[in-house]
Amino acid sequence: MCSAKPAASPLLGQFYAWLATTLIATSFPIGEAISPGLDPFVLTFLRFLLAAAVLGLFVAARFGIAWPGWEGLGRYALISLAMSGFFVTMFEALRHTTALNTGTLFVLTPAITAFYCIFMFGEWPRGRTVFALAFGFVGAVWVIFRGDPARLLALEVNYGDGMFLAGCFMVSFYAPLVRKLYRGEPAPVVAFWSLAFAALWLLIAANTRLLRIDWSAVPDMVYVGIVYLAIVSTVISTTLFQAAAVIIGPNRLAAYVYLNPALVVLMDWAIGKGLPPLLTLPGVLIVLAATAVLQLRPVAPVS
Image (tube, rainbow, N blue to C red; front, side, top):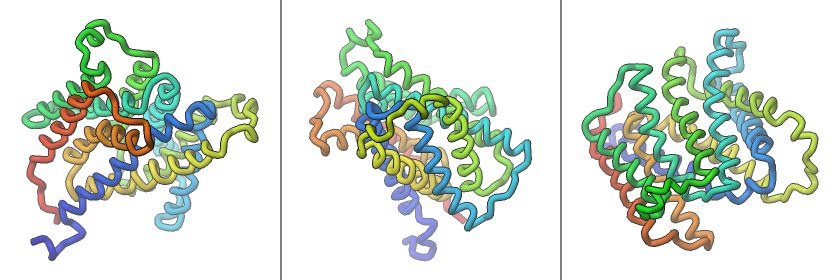
């Protein structure tokens, strides 16, 4: 029994990871729904600006916001580039592809991250991790090409898929970059400065687009979606992921990325969009198997 230390229970860590992954997965159908209503650069800027403001209030109350120095600002600026670049490509991609495709492509990020770690830290994946990464890749390819080998051989990918894949390479660089540049600050402080710089980069990228928008013509649904994405899919999910990482460790936490396709399928079904073609579903099952493989690893006790 784990009653002596419930806060450190692996089951609690799994719950945090499940909940955070579900919240992240909701960003795909919501992003697909609101992306036609606003320029993706502007939409992403508003998301990061609001998220930074909300998290900034918490950081100010809990830790205080102190000047991090020029070296610190440089580190946060680099970290934020990977984050902001990903979300811009995500919203641009959702104008041309589906939430299922983007949710499935996102499962490639652990493999891409592992590739970065080989060159940055000399860490080679092995054992069950290799099998899980392979399962995730096969499942992603299966869903994208709808189980049709002819489509795979013809490389029938659309512009949106290619755009989002570029974003996956950006966001996969985020975790190794944080590890490389981390100097012992509290995680919410790193997150706040990174979000603030991401908002700055997006403001520069959006530039005159902000002035050309007829804000009164933007549907109310878009504003509601931005608030949801900023608070739920950014601030809350990040906090849950950090708590889960402490309890179950970052390697097992990364496995939850593989749940995104199945969750997106369920959410699309729940909002009345129906299920994808039957040949797509085996790919979703494959990525679920990839998650299970990594979850078989024993959890080190939390002291």
